Image 1 (tube, one colour):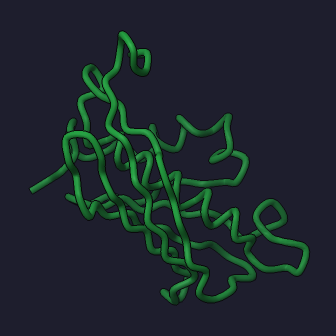
Image 2 (image 1 turned 120 degrees about the vertical axis):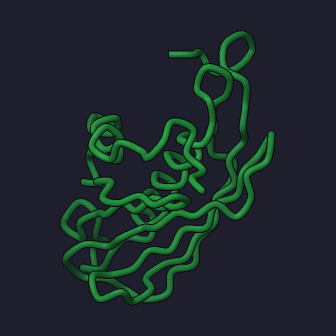
Image 3 (image 1 turned 60 degrees about the vertical axis):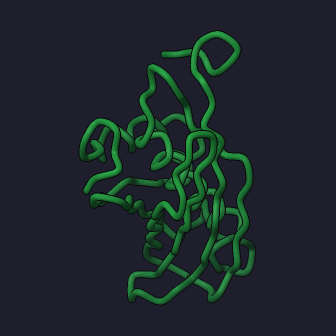
Length: 149
């Protein structure tokens, strides 16, 4: 059973939405979605590496928050609610030096006022690079909340 409010998410549209902000600068692209998960990828390159040539931990966290925030937003009716990040934590497991890393977000809990998402970031060989968890607040749109757009 799908958790998405409007059916299977439009991956190209999700990628375009972030094109002129941090996700676009980092090269984040949404690449797959299932009934209860979304996957995005990010290149490991000069924009996402730290000075020692490895994937920057902050870039991993930006990827994790991007994929989980977008996933959370896809589960609510935008005419009524918005999902916004409240907290994120991450454990960096192994370095990545080139290619792409892939982040997969899955909901652990989707309540009326908050959601918790787990994010696994893996390299192209499927090795775990980072594991993260993000909490999103579900807030009303319109008056007193996020402007409906």
